[in-house]
Structures are given as C-alpha cells and as structure tokens.
Length: 197
Image 1 (cartoon, rainbow, N blue to C red):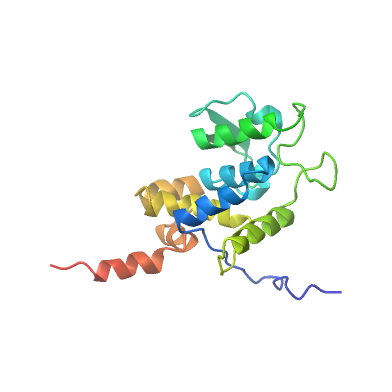
Image 2 (image 1 turned 90 degrees about the vertical axis):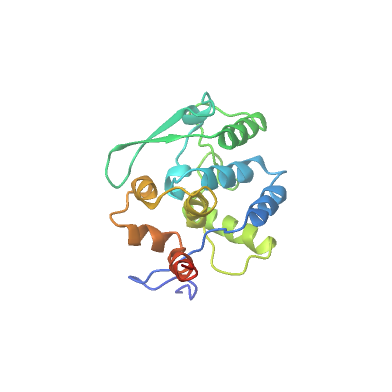
C-alpha cells in the first residue's frame, strides 16, 4: 500500500531550519538523558553535514578529535575529500556519547537501537527530528535536513557570516540558491525596504 504522507516522485518537500535559540535550548534539554540523540542533534546543528554523512560516522572518525580539529570525509556526490572543523559543543557531545556505553573503533556513532550495530537510517533520523520539534511545540515541517539548515540559518542570521562563505560551505552555485535554501530570502528582502535615508 502506498504511503499517503510520502511526497510524489519528482516533487520537493521543504523543511525549515530551527530559527530560535530558545527552541534549540529546549530540544537540548529534552535530549539531555539520551547521549546518542543529543550528540546527533548537536553535530547536526553545529556542522553543515547532511544526515547521510552524519549517520555514516564511525567512532574511529571522531574519538580523538579536539575542538578546532578537522574531521575528514569523502563526499558521496563528488568523491572529493571534505574537511569540517568541529567546535567545542560537537567534541563534548561526542565524548559524552562515547562515555555512555562501550564502543569499538569500527562501530557507527549513531546506532539503531532496534538493529544492533547498524547505523540509524535517514528516515529514522527524520522521524526523531520531527518528534523533538513537535515536543517543543514547533509547528511547521521539520526533518533531518532541518539540522543542516539550522546551522546555515544561524551562521547567517546570528553570526552574520556572508553569503559567499556559506555558498562555499554548502557547495551552492548562486547566492539565490543559498538564500532560498536557508529560508531567509523573504526576510532579507523585506529588511531592505525598512532602510531609511
């Protein structure tokens, strides 16, 4: 039987970033007793990694990293090496997760609780993100991709990172693509009209 909630082939479903710091704090508070889920959330909103890359991380990839050090990954789409610097929040979340249980070097960092040893799937991660957002009363559409969008949204809106830098981080080809992706173009255009001479 066909899933009525699944988008039709060729259509796009847009998910939103988590725009407000209070909502991010509330989700972290909600996840404080689940090291795996908290680590997934913290890495997701503190890097621009796609869920598919996050879920393929193994313990050996991250266990000895300190804040500011590089995590090196191979891009699935391009086959190129990709370097991401991890901040202190990421490193702490990883260390807390690794202290919570026994892990071998080859273990996936984000394991499925139902299928021993296998990584969480992207649909499972999306369901988790949807449930966390729902629990803190966020109403629009969220999924695993919201984590990456949240990183970009706050880089632009909270930390004033320029669009050219974010284009490079996201590997986008135009500023419009980046603004559309971050769900901030209408806000930025509207703010232009508020400028008084």
